[in-house]
Image (cartoon, rainbow, N blue to C red; front, side, top):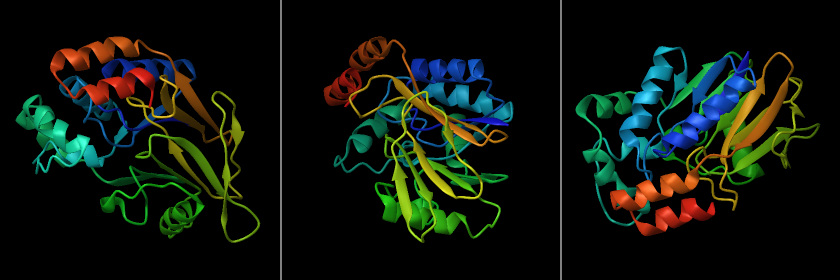
Length: 250
């Protein structure tokens, strides 16, 4: 199995399609979408419909924190997610909101555990930012002794951690397009980056591909017409800061 891992689509249809096309060209045989299908971006209905179609074709699709907000938005105006939730709500129909609401928080595929944020408390949307938090997530998922890989998103960064000969996890800095050996005699935790809203200064979309048979993990960056999406955001009247962030990749 070659598993394409996509997260944080953020209602950016061109980025999603570009990553799916790239994954197919790389030989992907399975797809997992790790949440945050909507929020921030200008194509919520289109992205939801695309992911519904992927699910019907056998893909695993999880729920992220931004998929909760537009189902029953409680608006405080304190975050950009709050500010776009009402707009997203209006651009989804009842069936789409119901579908988002029933998505699971986690899933397991053999040796692979999937979650939007962290395995230790999926519903609390914790950001996996360092070795300590990665260790907590891995320990929770490893209650199933068959689990060797834990994949999430949420932080909009690509990262990889592994348990070496000692007790604690160590960080490994991935490079785009370079296959990393991920032997099953170790356990691994990764965040796969954001398809629809990267935040590391690189405007290209992010996703990762796990080759289970070869025990290799490759982080990818995929170019697409992000400026067209920026124009869509401005035309839709979404907050300028969000358009500027997509424009710069920060």
